[in-house]
Image (cartoon, rainbow, N blue to C red; front, side, top):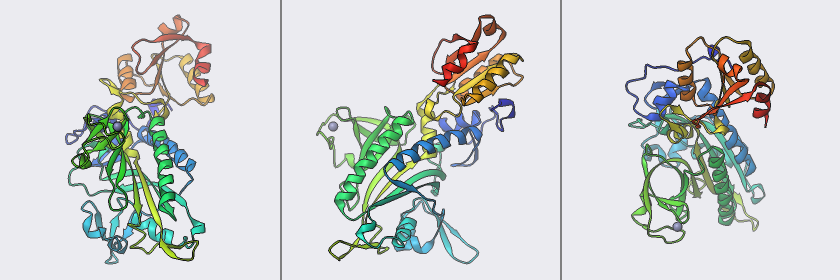
Length: 409
Ligand SMILES: [Zn+2]
């Protein structure tokens, strides 16, 4: 992609009502645009990152037999009344249709997936199975001040699993937990993300959140450094020791919840009468689990965790482009390298704009691609191209004929 043709530019005028670091930085760097509090557009750079996050999540969900579907954002009021959450869930967005009916903009999809599953599950032979979607969700937040960490509209993956017994749910829950660890590791958040014990509701003692450590997080968690797990604030009052090893020395820290997994039991299958015929002929409620991850929230979280004073430092797995190629004066060599990188399948952003070196370097640091390649008269005189890793202090010169092989490995 040539930067001169990129739809968005880095900008200096920032929205005055935006306070969060992640949103301000992503707006400055041209990844997102703010439409209203907690409502953002994803521009080409931001959308590329989101799609990489999406790709990793889909791979890991398919690896635990999840089948991808897409359910409506709009739900009839009756669905939410069936579970009692039309009145109980204060963040539910409610809207009226011109048919004089009321609808909810779904913040989660138990009220959709349960009646949908009822059309296909009749016998224990159809269980277990799991479906997931990556879809826009809505929360009618009173305050939305944390940028992408707490949006009114946001992108989420939600997986739902259906089982004929508690034991089967328990073993799938373990699988899903491991898949979540894989996801955060692949996203570059493995070291900062903790499995965190949270309250479980009526069907299990605990549910689990995945919390990423960051000063800008709105949650407080309590880490056990022996087990590398944490307890959330909600249950620390009743559970002041590590639930795994009994350690009393828990460390308080700020974090953002990037995922959660929950054993729903029959909380939703009972009100919707989602039943199956067991092997002994009896009729039973299907046992369910749900597993969420916020994609747009992860994008904001990565920016909070991976940056320096100059801008973002993307983990290689989700960077908008792997290489930022910068040409300091119009030269054919830069154009040639750009073409060769493209031909070799290397994702490259080519700064071909007519700007000063200082402006180009500042933009490259702000945008945060993992590798910066500078082609200048100086580098060519030294026999090649200047290569610098985004997080490194020093650069090195690599030979022109070694550039492609460097990025092809
Ligand atoms: Zn412990």
